[in-house]
Length: 106
Image (cartoon, rainbow, N blue to C red):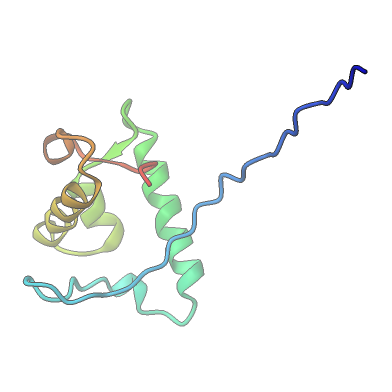
């Protein structure tokens, strides 16, 4: 008895969901005025789109603290703090501090 069963092909969605939250830590809250709107989902989607667009201008698809600063409309120091925080959380790329953050990192 031969049963030719086709392997199931499931399509994976490339939709990324970002859930903003402001958490206090030793440096205080990072002021992100763009996230103070009634429609957080649309605001975050817009910010993501801007970051992804800026990353396409880099061959490594990374954004640095200047791009983060301009996109989130925060100081360069706060943007660097965000990148430093991502460096600790992601732990996979030792060059994040010198190069930037890959916008496609999970």
